[in-house]
Image 1: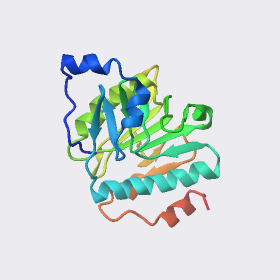
Image 2 (image 1 turned 45 degrees about the horizontal axis):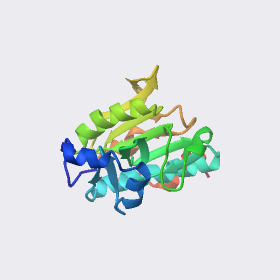
Image 3 (image 1 turned 120 degrees about the horizontal axis):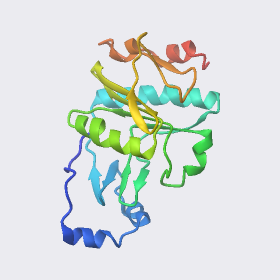
Image 4 (image 1 turned 90 degrees about the vertical axis):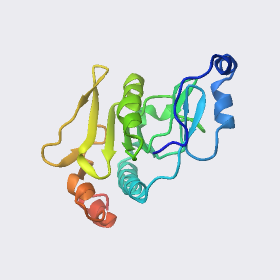
Amino acid sequence: MSDQKEESDIPPSQLAIMKKIKFEDYLEAAPENKCDLVDGNYIIHSPASFRHVELRQFLVIIIALFIEKYELGKLFSENFPIKLNDKNWREPDIAFVSQKNLDKIHQNVFTGAPDFIIEIISEDSRYRDEVRKRAEYERLGVGEYWILDPESYTQSTFLKLKKSKYIEIEFKSGKLETSNIPDLYFKSEWIWSGKELPNILNIIKELGIV
């Protein structure tokens, strides 16, 4: 997602004020539309491209139906913050939380490490997704992190946490699988064929959801 404001250093005078503000105060005053909290600043996101929205909806529907059928956990998409620390949160495109971590979901914030996060790259978000968020999610302990370039499989990155560090995953068969949601997979051709996304009803039948 693109930002309307750059993430930048904070003036000392503003920092002094921010030290007195509690995390709950940031939540209460947060804008209604999607935003991140970065060093005490709200970073407002501008509208996504149609391709971005379409791909996110495609993934969300399939994952949500799969985890609902097998009662694996909960899924949330955008506008639900993941707390990094008292001055920072992120609102991922897609985040999966397994049954064992459901107690970390609160009314308006998640305070643990999601098992699996997907971010879909926008034109100006590559550095943020590939560098800043990678470091943040690694430090938080997010088990698996996929960074999807909607236009290119080879420019996408798939990461798994091992001994507190991310290592890259290689899907040699063209079948994208996450160990955090057993038996769920996505074929690379579904997303990067250069054509329209496939019919979701056909996909959920193939996956045995219906």
